Image (cartoon, rainbow, N blue to C red; front, side, top):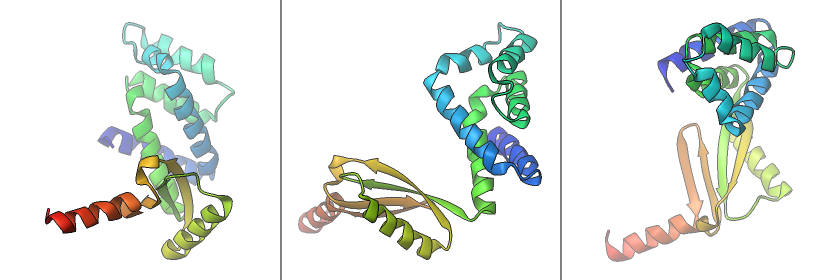
Length: 177
């Protein structure tokens, strides 16, 4: 994460938390991230320095006025004015960190060979919640190469209980590598 993203994301979060709109703004920012990824030409347009600052800000205003909270709209205008739309996702990451810390939320990414069933998901969320004492937001990935078991990444740590990992450990033991 860039220093710019940290500074601006933290600033937006502090403002929104004070106004008690932090959850709504987080949802809007995540929706915008998805929209920007689906429409990269929009970001290129807003980053095109051959257009005047006022023109680029006007494009944001026309496209999003009334669609997002005024704080989000003004935040995007500031990014456009500074030629920093490329830092939007870093700003969102910093905002999300602030939100998660304030609301006792931890994000976990789980990778399995097949999609989790509802009961498996509930069991995992319950176990992780009791381990961390926090609300767990689970991002699920399916990767057939794990063969079985679970690969979990949470709080900067990796917990690998996959068949692939166990087979690799056996191979290293047998070959001395």
